[in-house]
Amino acid sequence: MPNISKLLFFVITALLANMTMAQEEGVEYNWKKKKDKDGIAIYTSKVPGSPYNALRGVMVVNGSASSLVSLVQDTSTCSQWVDLCREARIHKRISDTEYYVYSYNDIPFPVSDRDVIAKTVWTQDLDSLKITMSSTPTPDLIPKTKAVRIKEAFSQWHFTPRSDGTTLVENFAHINPNGPTPAWLTNRLLVSSPYKTLKNMRAMIEEGAYKNESVAFIQEFTKK
Image 1: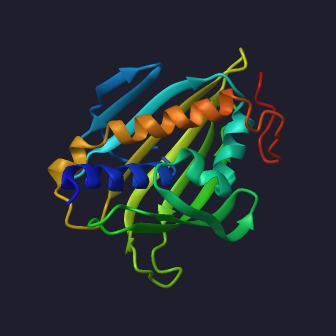
Image 2 (image 1 turned 135 degrees about the vertical axis):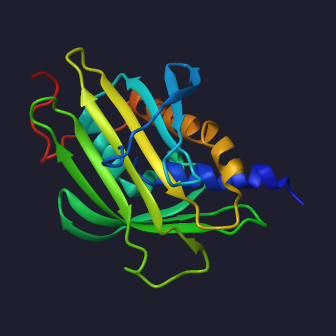
């Protein structure tokens, strides 16, 4: 039987990467740096009232904010940069900045697969030009599958364009994996998983993916 710790690592990888990642309103964090390698920093923090830690990842990408937004919006690329993502699709579109996304994560046996249906909302601060994608589960929107449905999570991506053409990328997640996974083990696995996802994202953008894409709802963002 495969090592159970490794399989639980796969679960956390898939959840953190597929859920978009901001900080819960009213929560005070005490971020501690857990990894700083290849220009990617990963932090974790305890969250009052929860056995699960929150995660924050930070990096700078040599690419535009629009290319990053385009990558995240293109759910068909999920398997190219998100570990164990077998499927992701827009379930229902309300507008260019609001829709519901379904994703299914294929987890190696004996750990159960996970899936999530989440409401996704995009906003942009016109002063800082920071673009934020917020995501929260809406577990009862579609019928249950054979996978374990994620019910409790809060996550975001943040893309802040800079005058030199690069983009500051920040992500955040606080997720309850909704299963028998011990909280202490889940917390130990919060570092490697998002690191790999961020690294894959940066590689795709810096190799030219979505280089010429524009996003209608984003205001002029290469320079203020």
